[in-house]
Amino acid sequence: MYPPVTLDALDIMLQKRFKEGFLSLKDLPHPSTFKDMEKATERIVRAIKNKEKITIIGDYDVDGVTSTTLMKLFFDEIDYPVAWIIPNRFRDGYGLSANIIPRIEGTELAITVDNGISAVYAAQLCKEEGIELIITDHHMLAPEVPEAYAIIDQKQETCTFPYEEVCGAQIAWYLIASLKNALGIKIDMMPYMELAAIAIIADVMPLRHINRAMVIAGIASLSKSQRPAIRAFMEENGKSELTSEDIAFFLAPLINAAGRMEDASHAVDFLASANIYDARVRLERLMEFNRLRKEIEEQITQYALNKARREDEVIIVEGKEWHEGVVGIVAARVARIFEKPCIVLSENEEGLLKGSGRSYGECDLFDIVDGCRAYLEKFGGHRAAIGLSLKKDRLDAFRKEVQDAYLRANVPVEEVDTEIVGELSFSEISFALTETVRKYEPYGQGNPWPKFISRNVEILQADTMGKEGEHLRFSLLQDGIVIPAVKFKSKALYHEGDKVTVIYTVNENHFRGKVTLQLMIDKIR
Image 1: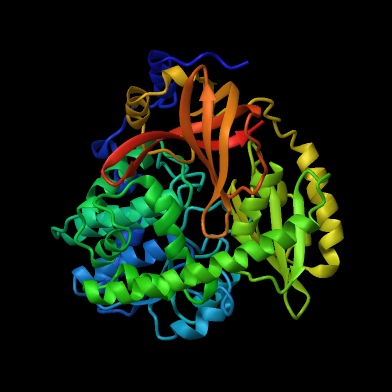
Image 2: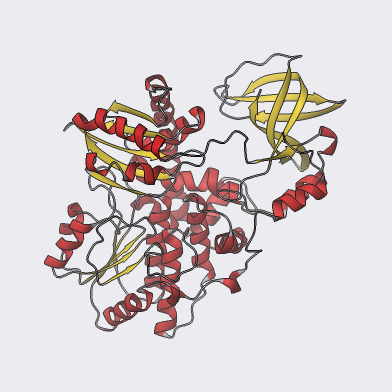
């Protein structure tokens, strides 16, 4: 089923992923290719000249936090005072909403980042309050679009920006570039690129075309960044340079944890820290949020797995007062375990179900749930991730309609794992192989780590590792070659002498000055 892998064949297969070639920063489209970019820029410049009160309205995930921080740092750099708000997930709800309008009274120009494209009612309230509104967002447009002075969103039909899948922080970066040009000032855009790169990875944008170029440049800059927050993070984790994996698995969850557990403004304060001392204190606060998040997430994941109806095409589970801050992560974990899209909902005291959904495989979860809007109070998101709310008495009907919509969508069933590039013999595993793999970094959405499959592998040793024994460590044998391997988040039982098929990625393990090869196991059959 899978072709045998050689170094040359692997090189060719990975190169084919980049149909547009390997772009660099010189290939970035001009800001003016965004619909309303010039109109928004002109209005902001006018506000600055007239000393109007400007308020930035962000969102509580990594993309929203970094977008808000970008705008705050830019206005700090040009020495113009602005207010900024990150809505509280628990008190305010998502993005620009009626709940935060009283908090922006006196604002003459409001600018949303990473939100606003579905805020029809809140936009009307802004108009009634005499607040002019600029929306910058990257999410899908609802049937009704808010009334605003300008809307910058690459998913608008008349937008000529050539790349559909970019995140909110990239649009904020472009807005800053446009403002810099209009104001005729010289500022270094690379420190802003650092934050945009974090958001691209965290918001699971496809790591191709300009996204790849921006992430490569941003990570290179992050590794030598003088930003106190980044220095504190690298210091805490003993890093001399950063990788996309460091951002995806360590930095992004820390930033997210503030909004999930308490208030995302803590994360903005951390990223915008003016000195290393403040950054260290704020980092410790985020680390504590993240420790608490992990505990609650593990508990709710077990509840969700027990309640899941495995026969459903889209898993939908609900619970009483589950922590709203972690339902999105739980949905992602359940989706991976059942290999099906999943929606996790939490019931509040008023009988309202609020939650998040995560897709799986080729399923466009946004499109499927979009056809079920009649059952929902609120809905938004994109192909891979959604947010929604509905009344409890509509849950059964909604569940049925979602299953029917999934069947109508004729979602392609992946009979083979498309991320497996081929069958690899242990004799082919070498540093030359990992060097070839590194040529096509960074990996993530749209450019997944190349996975390999090896058959007739004998388990020589299988031990637990981690504080709670939540991970597994192996010694594996094939054709006389022994290679160490690790499988995270698994408590499955394996026995010495078992003959298995292993699906994995190959990793270089750097420890105490030594570099060894190890397998990062995805599945054991």
